[in-house]
Amino acid sequence: MVNWLTVADSGKQAPKQLSKLQTVAIIIIAFVVVFASFYYLGFFDEFQPSTNTDTQGATSLTPARELEGTWKTAFPVTFYIRTDFETFGVLQEVGSENRSMIWTITATSDENVVDVEVQFTVSNRQLIADSGYTPDVSPMFLKGIISGTRLTLKTGDRTVAECNFTTDIITATWSDHWSMAYEQEVYTATNSLILTRQ
Image (cartoon, rainbow, N blue to C red; front, side, top):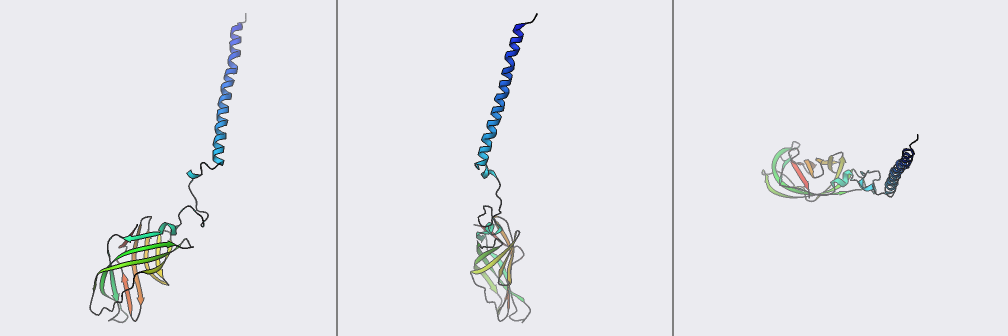
């Protein structure tokens, strides 16, 4: 004997299960459509890392733009002085002075070149008699050449300083050598010139 109640019940449950599957499928399709709409409207663009493919209007920082701004020494730095005023051709130590420095760095059209205005004040100058030292002047206008995290300061063909930089610190070794009627050099100990971003 056939149990018509069981057959009827089983016939009623099949559409309910199909209905649940259809509901889940519709929800998944709706979610995908909403997600795709947001994607194509650019909603997720701000969460993507920026890339610097256009150097004119790039949003990421180039090496020059990383350095742009004002940098300052936290304390006076000792600069040593040598001349050949009395030795004619052989540089000798003639004294020292302390310098507090402010560098103003601006970008140029070349992302690997910056303009650097160096201002400094001098204190505690100590020179031997007849040193022949003719001080260099502030401000100085230098060109900075960037290679990786290295910055080389130049005036003409003359290298004035070699620096390393991070986002907030420049560590430099200054060695400026020039000729007038005689030779002069002003230099620091290795990496003793430290400037921080202001």
